Image (cartoon, rainbow, N blue to C red; front, top):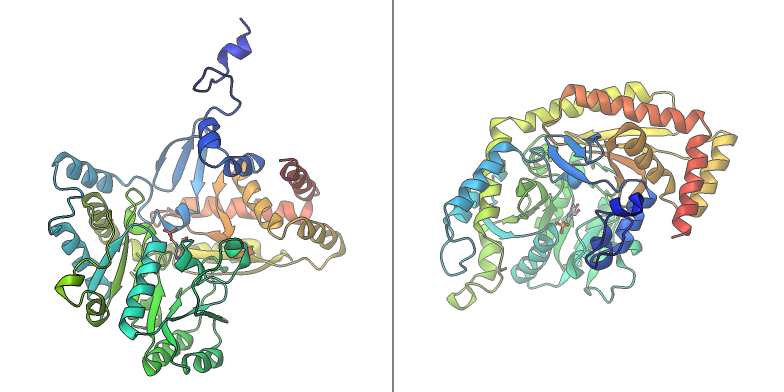
Amino acid sequence: MNPVLSEAPVGVRGEAVAEPSSALYSSYVNPQWVKLLNVLRMNQQYTHCRGAELFTADGRRILDFLSGYCVHNTGHNHPDIVAALRAELERSGPGMLQSHVPDLAGQLAEELCTRAGEQLRKAFFCSSGSEGVETAIKFSRAHTGRSGLLYASGAFHGLTCGALSLMGDPSWRDGFGPLLPGTEEIPFGDLPALQETLASRRFALLILEPIQAEAGIRIPTREYLASCQALCRKHGTVFVLDEVQTGLARTGKFLAAHHFGVQPDVVVLAKALSGGLVPSAAVLMTDSIYASVYDSLQRAIVHTSTFSENALAMRAGLATLQVLDREQLGLRALEMGHYLRGRLRESLAGYEMVKEIRGQGLLSGIEFKPPRGLRLRAAFEAFRRIHRGLFGQMLVMRLFNDQHVLTQICGNNFMVLKAAPPLVVSEAQVDEFVNAVRAVVETVHSSNTFWSDALGLARRAVGI
Ligand SMILES: Cc1ncc(COP(=O)(O)O)c(C=O)c1O
């Protein structure tokens, strides 16, 4: 028997397959995703994940500075959250009865509203950020009797049809239209534009991320957000903050809104509420907005979702809040974020392609700019002609393959590398990340291999 073939992985019908972990996924789920990860050499099998570390089947330890796009605020598989879920499973309670009052949802709602503070006194639970944004759309329309929806340039609010209607970037929208009518985009940070648009009194909501994550970690001024709130109040528009990435202590406070002293009418939370284990989202809002939807017995369940208040999701949310409190992860995010950006600024000073390091808490971005020097500029422009995300993706690939660090570029700004580790990250892990980034940035500026590898990557991608 051919020893190579005998050891080769086989598919369901006994046929030899090339990628042991990916063949079925490739056949039955998303072959393009598998191809993309293969091209980037990032198709790994993970055996286990703990805190800020991921362990692969081939014996590597990867430092996670992505956190599943801000899902893993409490770290991967936090033992207390795992224990809470185990206990919930073992009690054989009413997981998804749909015909009772789920007390855990009441408890979690109280905990969330207390932390969010001020006028946010009701919660609607669902299972994803997009679904939370859909909820904000419906409740704002019901509350105002208007249909218009206003959003900011660069925004990322999710990929269901309603949420997608609130994102201008054509790369997400193309081919899925027509999307919701009555939506309008205004430039993020432009108050005169907002003033003029809201004055039409056509808009049910203004939705903003308090810090735009996928747009490149864009942090507005305090005055901007305060004026957005004041203008919404003046013109009868619901002021919605999408805190799907920024919420649950990611930026150092429970809500990023708390840094800016604003009091939104609606806040969407998701991602980290799951504890990294059970999908969950919550839309917090004022009593009066809530009452606009559930305004009679006939409408007691007019907006609902099968999985929304399921016991495991509620347990995961409650356990996550306990861990955030007990381990003071908000404070930790503030301190570690400060330390991280300080170290990055120090280590990356003098590299001509590094434009800015910015962030709040443990949501940071390293922005790159096109080089001025002739040698680098020629290479950079060649890349840009192939794909505008190629440079950023090469950084990600190098960090992963050479330095064993997982990160990503921002989804709507390919020149910004995102750094968002679990909030439990240690100082030593931050140092490791900074050294890894410095090593890759050094390669960008000093060696030809970074650029020639990228051309190889482009060729592999085209050959797909
Ligand atoms: C700011 C923001 N809002 C909404 C969403 C959509 O969340 P989900 O993917 O859970 O639907 C995302 C997802 O990345 C997000 O970053």
